[in-house]
Length: 293
Image 1 (cartoon, rainbow, N blue to C red):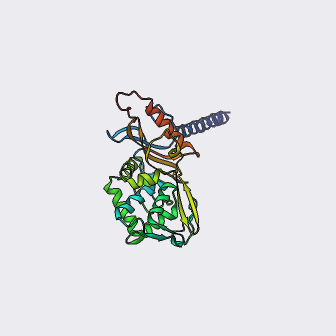
Image 2 (tube, rainbow, N blue to C red):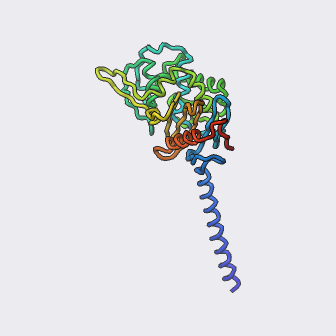
Image 3 (spheres, helix red, strand yellow):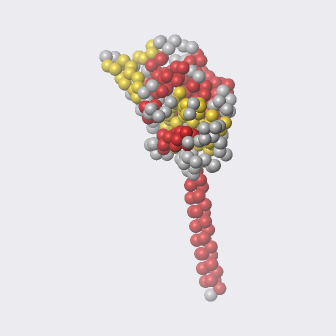
């Protein structure tokens, strides 16, 4: 009888323990998707940073110092390194089999053997996230791809991107990592380059491939939205990084840097950006919006 009572008590204890662990796990998952602490907008991206550039005031943040995969946000660094090298933008480059990336997300509309100018390759890499274009830019850097990757990391250090690391120019590797704080510095640096401003925010760009024109469109739907005044932007996606979006935009006359990493679903990053803009526009006109922890 004593053993039976003990067994029943033990069973109840184990059931309660399992329920507690399940509730704790669910709470942790909910916290990862919870609204940013102390902020009004219901932001669903896992890592977030919103920064007022002029005052360096952090307006919103979540996991701002966590180094995580950044996918094609990498191409902003690729563009900076290409422009720093001052190679002729009108030089014609050939897409070769070396530029053929493999794995999920490696799709490209540029066929092997295509000849395009360095300018066109940079344009479609920034605007349409063309991976073969980005790889060809790195491969044609003085010293080739290894030297290009070294230059990417040197540039990151120079910009103060202390948690960033780059291993390829496309962003297809999950070895390309950075924190939202790092990426805010990258976005600001990229926004000071007129070429990156234009190429990243153009709605479409057509290139001649043989006898036909191949049209590319911007991967960021917001550049076609008249409510936005975007200075520079870049989208990104691989499985390990989730959906990503970074930009600098003018909101109520202020330069605001927005970093959204590891968003789930097709439109979450865009919806998060919209919520942030509306939240900022709703703030009192006298002074900058308060930051969040």
